[in-house]
Structure formats: structure tokens, C-alpha cells
Image (tube, rainbow, N blue to C red; front, side, top):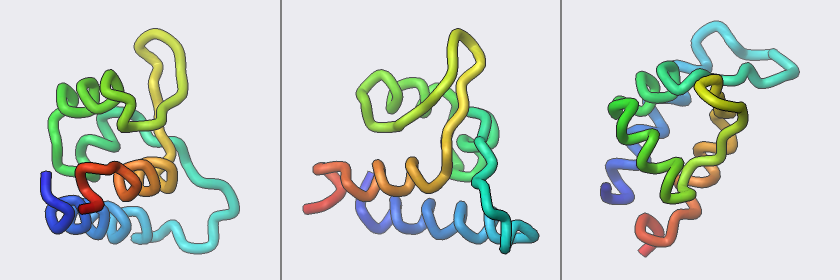
Amino acid sequence: MTRDELESLISKGQTQQSNGNEGKLAEKPLSSRELATRLDVTNQTLVRWRQQGLLPYYGHGKHIFHFWSEVVDALRQHPKLNK
């Protein structure tokens, strides 16, 4: 994935997040399905990214969730994308 592709995915996700969510004090955790939809990737891609240590996540067993702000920060800091 190129840096431009990543920025495009992040922009899409931020637009989706901001629709009706302005002003919330606490960030809503996202399920893997919600994150995959927001990033326009498959669930298998998320699994691979988690295994590679690219995505921060929380949970136990099949109950996994993510915080959008942490995902954005992690993807922006990934060395392959910051050349």
C-alpha cells in the first residue's frame, strides 16, 4: 500500500467517523468488521496487519476492537508508508 493509498483510506474513514459523531467526548471502539469497512479492506487483511504488529487492538478471543485514532496513528507511523 502506498502512502497516498493510506491517506485516502484514512480520509474516507475520518469522513465516515465525523458523520454525526462530532462533539462526543469518548471515542467509540470499532469492531474488526467496522474497521474493515471504514478502511475498505478485508477482515483477512486486518488479521494479517494485527499479526504483523501494524494495528493496535484490544480484546480477547474473537472479541477484538480498535480505536480509530490509534489505527490512524499506527498506519501513519509505519516505516514502509513513510518514505
